[in-house]
Length: 495
Image (cartoon, rainbow, N blue to C red):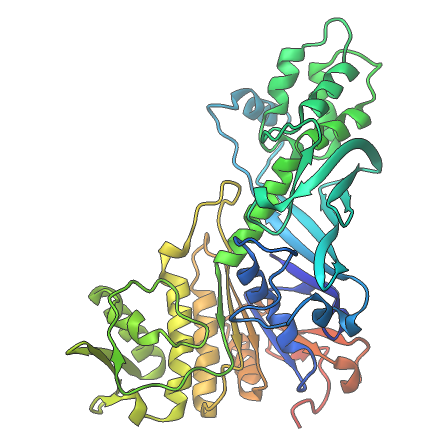
């Protein structure tokens, strides 16, 4: 997910497209919408992979928006969600040799496409919501699907409407978006027999290489090319001037509609799996915890299973974590198992270890954040296989990390974030979404940009209720320049 746009959602009329940089800082007055925007990420997380009546699960452990009517602005109208997402599909050199050769001969370089997905969610009755419209735009194509309250679907591709009887079925996907089932009862992954038959009837004339055409239609990635490349490809297969290539291309995209939806669903599901969320208030520590012999792959958003996570961590991994916190913050953690209980000690440099209960409240609030970040960066077990996703973005979403922290620790926290981002490998993509009221964090990031510790293009600051600060829009985006100064920033914001 590269950008996120929310319309008629919570307190927002329209956020506009918010750039999700490696470090995105959300700032603004209390009740300005920061948390509502940030909670969209755990909302996706709790809504994917489960059976539900509507599009989203509005109420669960991490996010409680109650229901659709309580989430839509003023309880009226539709919620519109816009996401810009990279979609990547691999070309198999063995199975698609002819396709690869065609790419090489025509100097086409394909590394995926960027799609803009827009979902319009509306209310059915009794607070049950449904997907009213789905739009998917990529390259120079646009697919639009209108759904009725009974899930019947009307499909338009590049302004070309199709009269096939179809309906949406979310039970087939496990994702947010429904696959399209055509009334000819064809539920195969390559589309509808009815659509395929229409294409062949449309091309029914002598010398049509039907076998070659069908083989062409099975090529993955082909449908993500621009119109001109699609036209050129079909011209090599069909030697006739009587063919309406625009109509043929649109039929071809219709034929692969479920492939496209599957790719979007895989990408959104990957976001859900790879989102780590930290609540603003973490649980109070206990002196002893009952030991439970189970594996903890993911730390709870409030850190309640933190002791079991460390108690069951491999010794080599624990040593790495201890080295990480010691280098960045000057302390390390050590779990002790004794007679069915676990005790967590904090060891500061040059000091004896003390139980977490006996340390300052700042450590109790900081440690779950650090553990969740470290786990998200290092736990490969959380990476599930998605057939259409080359690599996954990891979103680490944190509410008010500065609570109960001394300004010096806040600055060290900002330095840690920038260090992680600057140290990522080429194939790693991590995005921090941080809601904060901390002037120290904002200023420290600017200082780190000035000293070239992080590139200014990797940071975005989103200001909510900016009109009250003298700016034009409710949501404004500010950027740092190369010297660490904020552009589009209100004077005296923290005063």
